[in-house]
Image (cartoon, rainbow, N blue to C red):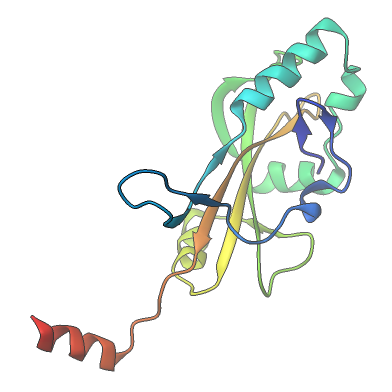
Length: 166
């Protein structure tokens, strides 16, 4: 899978992404606090689609989804109402991949909402990348990167202490 960016395609795919969620430094009331944030790639997508339309990027470079991504999309992709911006023939499908500790280097394809909820309740921190894919022309683009997991495990002692404080 090769994510698309305004500057062209990035070789190495999602494996070159860090496994930690993106951290943003808050400015304002809680000055200096770090918070995990979701990154939205829609602006990069618009710019890349425009580059394809004007001919700066050849269509075969834009529509280069790997066999594994196409297979995952076919079996686990969630249909969207949006049509493909390149071929305008078929509706896009979303696939989500998780990257983080104890997962394969190439990530793990999330096969259901239940699976994503299970990963979200784990103490390890993961990053969930949502990719849109066209089954017709093989267009693919990363839509968002969101933190997942990192929940603190509550022990019985912690719960008992919290009850006594009240």
